[in-house]
Image 1 (cartoon, rainbow, N blue to C red):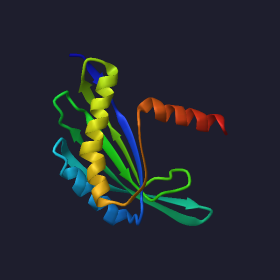
Image 2: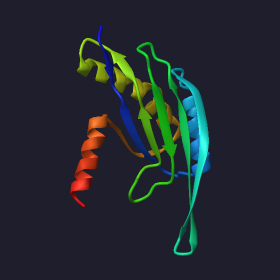
Image 3: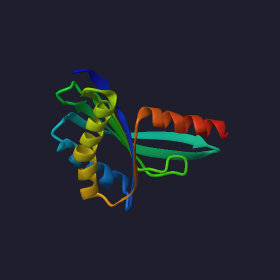
Image 4: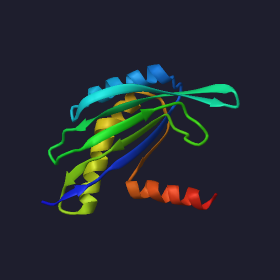
Length: 150
């Protein structure tokens, strides 16, 4: 059976987001997903001087590997406060292969896996305001449209 690359980008906005607490909760959820391995979290801090004032940005990055029969690759998550330019708290990139008869079936396998393994546990732990699950092509189209509007 053919093997297809079926990556996903997930954006989630939650209510009552607190950087450290929400990130820790997210880490615990991901560590309990049986298909994820080597789940680690790192705090990132950037200090910038802007017009004589120090601006501090902090976020958490969570990384790991997928261990699925089709030969999963990796995942990467950023947990941050929502901004007008980036109106979400969690951004996830899931790199995954799926084995199926055709591309559409492979995409459905990955969608089902993402919903069952990642989205459902997150919905149990957080009050989600908004979520989107996109293919890489869909994200590229959004980026192109944003670029055209400038």
